[in-house]
Image (cartoon, rainbow, N blue to C red):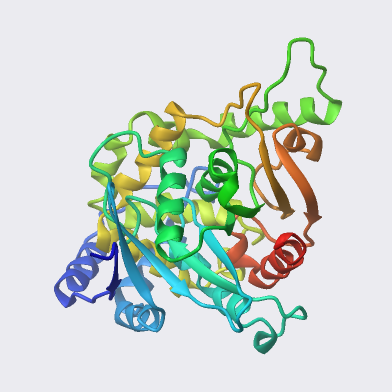
Length: 384
């Protein structure tokens, strides 16, 4: 029996009406006058967004759009894994697995799919296409929730190899940001024989290269360490909570649509290249489609567990750890933390380092053309 089966996203009018009712019954907290965004998601902005969500947003339209893509589910020992599989134009398409992160989902990859599968028709200069596979991480979206502990980036990487081989791809390319960067790194560390190359637009936050006793680090590396520590002190409360006590916030966020939207969309505003104007980088419909997906699948709790597993199995490299596969790093200027190249090269075989002119943490959604062009340039050179 094949481990792969077709899948169709479905729309439930009952669940949609329940969501709209809950939004309208939100108990709004107070806000200190003049606090603006300094204390978190600004109150009036969230009220306006929730009004749009309950009155104008069309979830059925989003489901209809999703249904235009070929969806499947892969049976693994961690349950069924949802994924898209869109084949590229021509016989020499490069198999590529794209892995999302949090608070994103497979939805943030949709705009880049046509650019990768039929690049010339969509204005890209190079005629290099990809067979694109976009899975939903375990516990995210339409994938099953893990029923045991230990589903970390390394275990997900194993599942990705199983999935790609079930699709007929013994060797393939990998790309990721956020959690997806950790999974793609784990692929390079543990499964390099299956990889053509690794492309990252983020370096995992837990990454620490091996430093032999007496190793001197550069001033730029020392400055990065200080800035990273300061960033976590000022902005890392969400990650600490999700990584240490994931169940506690899940009760509130699984029950309050407004709370869920605030918790997630604050990050899209802070981590993107939007200059404080959230809608300059994302449409309201795109943002709400992502939040609604989390709501309808009730996966905010299970998504947090990747943070808990990440704390238990961080990417702290030993003396024998190194990603030998050719690696490309796309450096978007508003990424939340990007180490200097020397720090990355201590653990990765970096063969391409691309400073981007604009964009932030959600590269595939913010700047799909820039990301697609860089993928073409890199994998076009390492495919053999």
